[in-house]
Amino acid sequence: MRRRMLAVLLAGTLLVTGCATVPTKGTIRNSNREGLAADSGGVGVKAKPPREGAQPADIVNGFLEAMSDSRQGFDQARLYMTPQAAAKWKPETQTVVYDQRDGPPEQKGDNYELTARRVATIDDRGEWLPAGPKDNANFTFKIVKVNGQFRVDSVPPGVLLGTNQFDAKLAPRDLYFFARDRKTLIPDPVYLPQNNLSAGQAATQLIQELLKGPTKRLGNGAVSIAPPGTAVVVSVPVELGEATVALNEAAGQLVDEDRRKLAAQIVWTLNQISLKVKITVDGAPLLPEDPGVIQFSSLGEYDPAASTSASTVLYGLLGGKVHRVDGLDGASDQAARALNGSQLYAYDAKSFAVNLRGDSGAIVTMDNGKRVVAYAKLDDGGQNGQGDKVKTIAVEGRTLRPSYDNADNLWILDRADSSVPRLRVRTRDGVIENVPVNFRGDVPQVLRMAPDGVRALLVLESAKTGKNTVQTATVRPAESGKGLVLDQLRDLQVPLTGITDAAWSKKVILVAGKPAGSTTAQPWLVNTDGSNPQPLPGGSPTFGIENVASNANPDTLPVFEDPDGRIHWQGRDLDWVTPNDEKLADGLIYPG
Image (tube, rainbow, N blue to C red; front, side, top):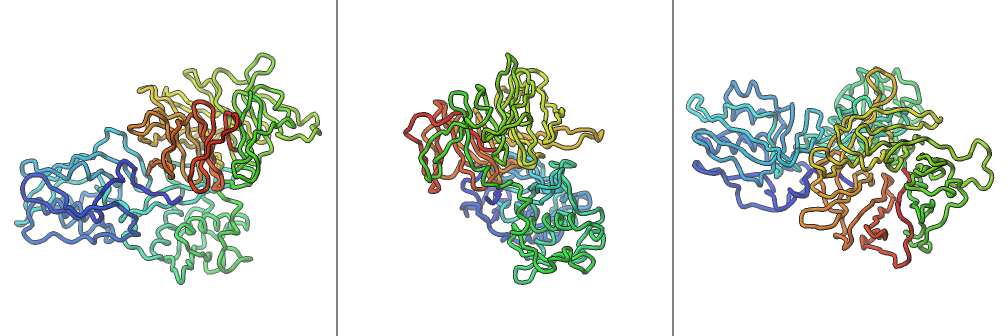
């Protein structure tokens, strides 16, 4: 699903081009050319220099228009400023996205003031940072005369960009890096200027950004295979949809395995603009055994979604016992089938998790009067040996449903009802490690790890408001070099109340919460950086939602459990399906 940037609450009727008429007195008002802000593919209004004798309102309007055009390094925008202000202005530092529907700048004496809701801030790497609900983008345009001409003598905090200009000026892109185990790619979402870029310019821009390394969001939690100093020798030419990425000699030091992984980063990054790719290092093929076009399909083992067929199978609990749920695809009867071939079936489970290969599971349960997380194979075939018996990890207090990543690491968060929640990971080799995290007094309700084991999705009850929020965080090596930490917690600012659950869903996040005007939780989608929250396509369901079952596999069919324990899902035609049978299962989950 292509990431779109405008939040749904801003996706109403917007100005298509951003052109506006500015009176010389009173409030600046938008023109009446209205329509939906569509993806224009980079087609926008080219900035024009100020006219001779332009009045203050015209200068303000022209300056706002020119700030949306970065093609010549904002040269046109600087023409609207005094020389002193132009010299101090640093448009590359950030872009402040504001809701232009809140009203254009108003005249205040000799100056004009912009007061609008801040939607987000985009930093110098293109990271989208959602703004809080009461965060405004206030700015005063100080107007003075220079050589008889009105000019802006105040320096904006970067670029001010109205939502009516956003789609035409910035494009959502993913840069791809590797998880710590160097086996799974991680998408790192950014917004980059598009301003009528040619295919070659867009490809060059993407590769240059990729070679800068991960953004702050991922930091050293992600790995770039490109050695320090790696750069494109020339711009990336594109002919007939085929891009040639010529890297300098710095990439020549890579061993064969890492050359293939660097190719995966480049090919996955360029694939989103539909380009075939050739890669050279110091003039020679990056992959000597594959000197021509490197096929995207040949690099599927690094898929961020860990898209195995096992990860599309639905599981749940029925009467506290582990079950598999069949029949959602219509290929068989809808039924919950007991996993009585697993030793986990002997336990009464409070929650259940399945690994992404679908061969092992973990439950929160009681064992000999003690609360534990128990894990074992899901089907032992009656041949479990001594080493295959159920293993347990002691937990304390309220324990969230465990979560697996693609490396078979099992993530456990207990003491969730205390002032010091505890996050641990049981690695594939059985080692249990503490992962320090500071929730700042917030109370964790949900933990979902992405397949890469680097990105975490959380539902937290705010210590300040008592309301649930959806946040992402990053697992990375500790500064000491010993162990891991979870930090970079970021509130996605989803415009929902009463949030009950959240889960990874394809390339986005699926959230259950109450939109404005609703008394029950509904399914919404939001990008992983917090941009573009919107209702799940297909119409609002008539039931409320308590739990969400989904994961990053693109073939997964999200399933919802209502407060009465009944399950619902959307068919391929987006119609809602609600079985009439007895309860199939509760605590529904997909692997992950």
